[in-house]
Length: 199
Image 1 (tube, rainbow, N blue to C red):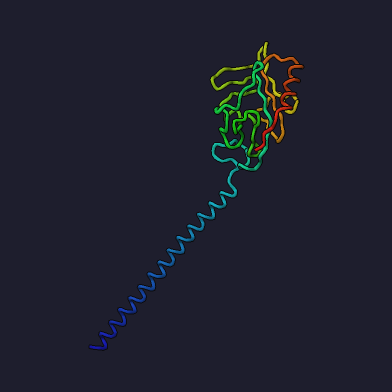
Image 2 (image 1 turned 90 degrees about the vertical axis):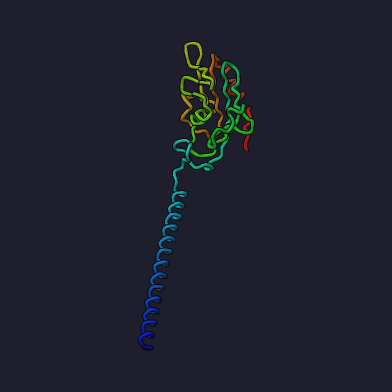
């Protein structure tokens, strides 16, 4: 009887050891599988971060990553001889890509490559096309037989500025009214003397 009991105990021990060994192996495989899945997720997330689209949510189409550029341009907007005041809170930092900041309404700060002026005006909720400048309150200043909307970049007249990407030290004039060529030259001179605030 002693041998039979001993044999049964040995079998139970062997079964228990086999079962424990199997459980350890199974737990080890589960742990490895979980760690592998976590590694894949982390690796994929890292790859997506490094190779993500240059445009973050809410950013302009075709723009580079934030911080890919930091440039400043002077802007002057005149409507019937009055200077449009971008220093008001309604026009300060509405997007991180391109904006006016620090209570200054004369320097455009651009923080990414590929950002166009059209996006700046869109972010400020100002309508702008090649014929009209539209205030937030809906007032429209459109080219007609008496008044014209004109655009100048670095002293050169252009037909539209929405697709223009401002570069460092650019000087941009938007003027609506019936200015003479001499008055335009005076505004361009005013713009040339306007300080560009770099920060």
